Amino acid sequence: MRAFFQILLLAALALSNHALAQFTAEWEPAAETVVLYNPKFPGSEALAKHYAAKRLIPADRVIGLDCPVTDSMSRMEFNQQLREPLRKIFAAKKWWTLDKDTVAHAGVRVLAVMRGIPFQVRRDRDAPQPQKEDEASVDSELTVLAMNAPPTEGALKNPYYGASVRLPRFTKAPGLLLVGRLDGPSDEIVRRMIDDALFAEENGLHGRAAIDLALKSGGFQEGEDWLTASAATFQRNGIPLYIDRHELVMRDHWPLPDTILYFGWYTMDAAGAVASPEFQFKRGAVACHIHSFSASVMRDPKQHWTGPLLVKGAAATFGNVFEPYLSLTVHFDLLNKRLLEGFTIAEAAWSATPGLSWMSVVVGDPLYRPFAKTGGTSLGNDDVRDYLLYQGAARRSPLDPDAAIKTTITALAERRKSSRLLEFTGLLSAQQGKHAEAIDLFDHAEALAASSTDRVRLRLYRAEMLRRDGKPQTAADLLRDLLSNDSLKTEPARAAAESMLRDLGG
Image 1 (cartoon, rainbow, N blue to C red):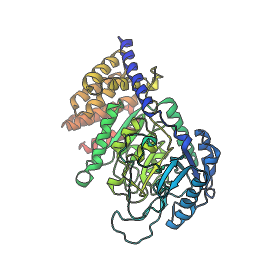
Image 2: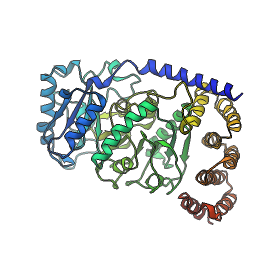
Image 3: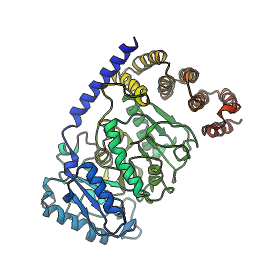
Image 4: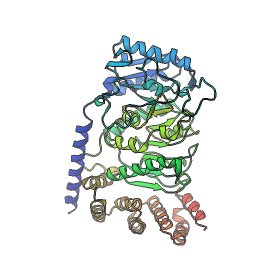
């Protein structure tokens, strides 16, 4: 029976991989990528050459342009030192053919910007009207490099926004450049981002997602809706998910093992679970926290969100270098849908961003396809086997999650004595608001758990489900029992239990 279950799940994974390959195989973007670096910035050229070598990008497509070594540049500096020289190089090398404002032929569609190129274009005009500002991100301005004289006030409508096809099949914007930035607090981090993207593409990106709601409403409801829709996307694709349903950022030291996807909002600086000392993203992870100035200080390891997320191991993130207004930021629902369909980071991000010549940056290898490989013909090693089994069940019957996932995975977990599979099923029940069911599954998983780290996490999950189910006293008793266990004193998640107990009045 166990072999039968595994054959079914492997068949589901093989079919989904075949469909994904057909959907995304029509373009090899590395053949149409140019790499840009700043010779005046120490390390920028070396990073550009490292990236080009890893992605097999020809040396003549690695371009150095002298520009300021600061984070920002004036509009005049941008035009004279980046925009106009690039346009001349593209024309001279016949990477595109311009006819007025139309690109008749595009041989380059991707621009990889290296650490050392400024990321802000400063404001020229004082006190502009809202959404008429002329400051912007360098990267977003470069997406419209083909335009002869793009307006500088406000955002330009992104013709690629909402597109469901990869860029070469999208005919309405032949000159659009997909710009991604390999930048961060250090050269070492940038090299790691490059290498991690390639590792994940080769080995598959398998793990869990975490969504941090902020319980906002009114004019902010849009952001909550993006996160809720992303959760549904993760569920359909068989990615186990923990959703934090508190107004404040996810609790310090809350356990988030094997995190490959993190999306949340809304604090100015990195805080909560993902900023805790023990937390580390899984290799190749994609993470973003919405805030107006999340990327305004990109090279600081502690300030705002972009730098700290990269320090914690993320391979890619997204942010804003100035105030973008919520509706003009990257829309998480579209972003995650495209990522799970096998798009590159740059394709997914720019097809999910309504405005160009605005504030957004895509930080990471623009060619990175996190979900180019979603499974395989075998169940892999112990580190990923349970993730593949769960994913196979979800994809086999995505419209019937109770029957397909819970019945199949619970039975398989019993046979395999797998605490983790039961935990995944409990997380699904929690996502569906079936708190009592989730409590039973977490309790059963804890009984099978082999490590104290797993037992603490499952106890915390149970306590949270009890709280949501209107049983705070029972949750508090459960936490007191956990904290009285001397064998768990060294577990970092104990601090989350203490914090939760205080919130419950204990």
